[in-house]
Length: 436
Ligand code: FAD
Image (cartoon, rainbow, N blue to C red; front, side):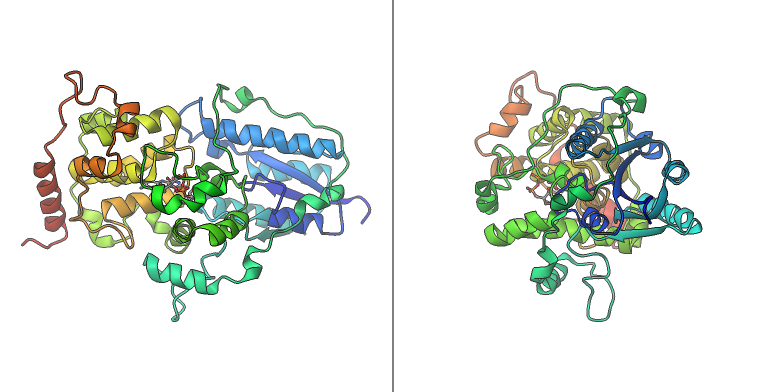
């Protein structure tokens, strides 16, 4: 037993405190070596060498490594395929078990299955834990045992199912003396991973209680800082979902519901993985999208002539963030006004959003396009002018991102609203067989 070690594999849980899998590893009988793997199969899909998400992960990895080195251990960072990484580690150490928190995305599920098979062939146990969500796909089901596909009853059952234990925090940060005492190890440079460094300031993972308390009143106003900007932290696990859910329970029911939307879409992707590239509702697969490339380019660049749409796209292009209300408007505009396939918009957002999360992005795009479960009905076409008047009445947001709006320098609308609205409704109706 003496020379045996366990491995804790960090993935989308880049924190020390309240980390379920890390806590379990550190509570085991042997010292723990923490590792992180930069997987080229994930990195090569990223559209640019200047990627703020990679920068974010890299800086969190550096922080973890530094913290572990302060207590006489380290974080071993491997650049290569996970299967090669485990071959590397099993050649060098006598490993009794590998610990990790579960990831529910299709690629991750397949990767973990391969790693599990590899480890089991070497009689090494692979222990995985629930950490990224409060409830996994099988935890909140209808009374007949099938998954929910409508949000409101799902959220009701979610709240009924929640008990104190679900929000119990794991004291992983108190067990760092159980880490394997080895000296510092080299960290691959960012450019060795194929990425560049550049100045970027990330939102804090400590939203103040005031933002959460006033969330219900201010969350729809893109011109004020009324939302938490926690997306990237929840995505990469730099904040614990149990911790933020406890705060939501005490401070704001409206905010809690948004966290439940996140959990809802994660369980949809897990239960219905075909949504990855197909509409949730099969009858929507024959919508004849116009897919005009020139119009798509104008939408991407924030040059549609609709200030709220353009402000949103420019905010996204410049900062990697777009306010939720504006995400809904821009997504509706692309899929309804321009009749461009939601998958084009989804891919564009995926390449840009700091908080890109496959399940939430896919779920929300399908919601906006009307193709998803519990989606906005196809005849609901947001009027971008009215949305602007309602949610940015003083023009704070528009002035920031589209200063030329209202002047002769601003582009003319790409399409007239009423014409586009009728065209969208008729196209959907026809494709769904509602017009004979
Ligand atoms: P807050 O409003 O402060 O909410 C806190 C957290 O709750 C968010 O960080 C997020 O984790 C969760 N949340 C809030 N709203 C939603 C929602 N509608 N669906 C799922 N989770 C939610 N969210 C992502 O995390 N990743 C995405 O890739 C993503 N893509 C989207 C694409 C479209 C077309 C739309 C309409 C919405 C998308 N959202 C996505 C949901 C939402 O817009 C963002 O979660 C939110 O704007 C992030 O800002 P915040 O952290 O300040 O959120």
